[in-house]
Length: 535
Image (cartoon, rainbow, N blue to C red; front, side, top):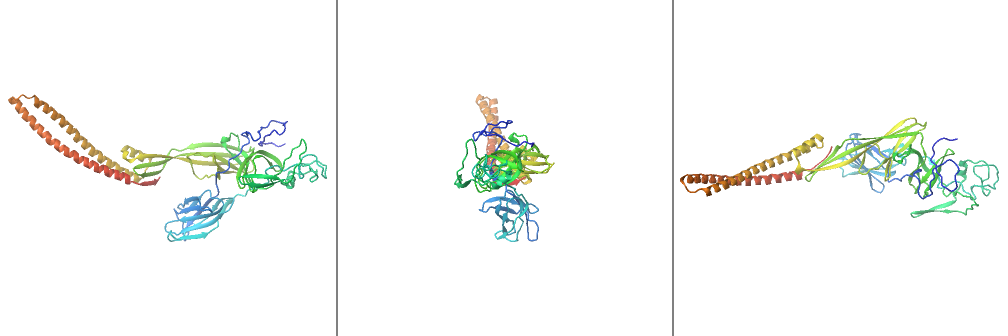
């Protein structure tokens, strides 16, 4: 008796008479269990690291390192830190070319080859003193810091047993008569005890495969006879393919635990059609599932059972907005802030053997990865992260993401309160602060001139109103001696007010000229300001 939770289902080719298992309709509407997995959109590829030094062995900081593929496409770019180190993720296997540049040194081109299966490769470089217009080309070998050798799984597209002249089901007419795992039909393999491994070794593909453009076909080599009330499973492909045994976890799948799975690479050179599959491990049934068609060279994950040894959980955390970039250009101040989110996956392995867990984390529009965790593969919907978990140990995977938020301010609307807010948020540096204080000083001068002009215009209006009053009073005088004295007084007052009006008109004109010049100077200052400051 075997205990566990293998994934299993039934297709109604015959009526089952045993404990209920999930019924999966053939090809029409597949149930959520078992499930298939998306193919990769971007392959994670190995990480390429290295140190850039000068001829004396001292590290070179802030050197530009660009990686190019065999066809000349840019596949990664980085800058060296204070220790001369660089790191580029997602470098594909095969030929790679590095272009390294730094001020005061010759441009260096390094040709190398990244070995298949490497998780991290190291490629150091030494720059020669000289002009960047000079180019030095060298050939160097990348050092694999850690590699992963995928075991071969003897999996074929189709079953291993058929009822033709090779292997079949039903009573055999071969040489032996004892019971066995496989009964021969037609005398080739007789009765007797055969293991599953023997059957796999003896099985031969009964069909030839070939590509037809975007299609593929399998042609049966010879006719296959099927007796009445019998069925046949015909082996159409017999080939070893690369496979890595993993456990896969997607918390949005609705499953209580991770799934046991195989990460296949179709190294057969043929297209493997979609359908059902069974996994035999150590000559015992381990589970079954569904798989989509797999093209030659394509990698795909297939799950077949629940991994009862793994316990998983996750926790989400977030940080307040933090300012990362300020750009001042064309009269606008643009700030970039980040809303950072952190998700920590916890996996406990209760088994006595280690596990390699692939965690699927959703791809979210507008979010960018931060931190050290990098996916080994990305699909249109998921990022896949590799997490090794030792026996009887707990491992953590932290995925950090950031969503940029852009805010723009017109410098013409700058106020002292807005400047104080920038300083409190620490969203500008000292150089930008000095430039903004200069703009505020110019705006203050313009406001002072504007206030003087408003005062002159207000006084002018008051004089006009008073002159109107005097003129009305003069009209009411009748010509007596007292009234003539009052008329003379009104006349002198009107004369003084006219002189003041003339002075005010000149002063307003001068203020308008100063205002125009000061405003033009402020506009030129705002338009000429240019900053691009990472915080």
